[in-house]
Amino acid sequence: MAGACLVLALAACGRVEQSLYLAACDRDIRNATQAIETARDDVQRAKGYSRRASAYSEKARYSRLYKLIAEDEYERLFQLAMNDHGQAVALDQGSAELYLKRGQAYYDRATLEAQDGKDAKRWFDWAAADFELAIQKDAREYRAFDWLGLVHQQNGEPEKAIEDFTKEMALDPLGKARLNDAYCTLASHYEGQKKYDAAAADYRKSIEMGGGGDGCACDPYQPLVALYTVETRQYDQAWEAVHWGQRSHKRISPELIERLKKDSGRSD
Image (cartoon, rainbow, N blue to C red):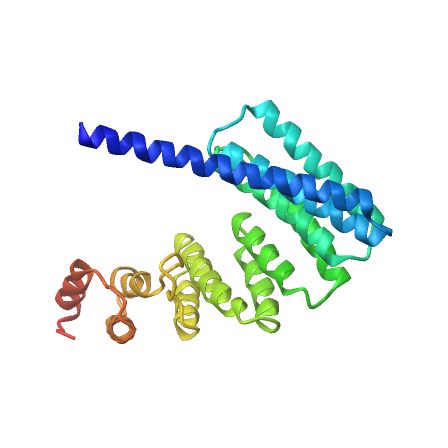
């Protein structure tokens, strides 16, 4: 009985949190509407439209993610967001920020489509187009490079993602973390194509840049040890990768290390 009460309490808490979050979105929509109505010039008006668009888009994203609305209501909210983004861009075409915000809305929709098993490419492509426009307006807009790299990763274009994150790294430290993850992802891509030399080179690049520092990031250590042990049988390089992992406190599976010991005739 106590367990059932806990489940009900947690569900109730979840509903309260959802209501509060959506209420905050509605408040942002009202405040942005007021900003539009009281704006003194087109630049201020554009910012108001952009803020309202982002609020509509976030309300749509959140509601669809948690299955709080029907598909037609999601489409209605998303279209309101796109209408406002269009108004914002029309009023201030020189603003990188406005293209960045619209690109983020497209990116959010793309990720939802992908999670639902639908074709998300057109949404990712539209997001990429806006991030590229943001870069044209401001070549130092590192956030646009960041989002563009994420799009290219999602679209299965890891080489382009590496270019994006390299440019981001020159502008902001976040680019380094993105870049080492992109090298690891590209290495996995090459490994799947049995391009083992290229895969090993990019796993090593990821390690050199501090790859695997985030629990959510691609970890290059174990796959590099496995590649050298199982695929190329370069046991000295495999042990080198094991030692790198140990010094960085990365876990290499005991089963893989036992196989390496057996195949290499070495104990460390």
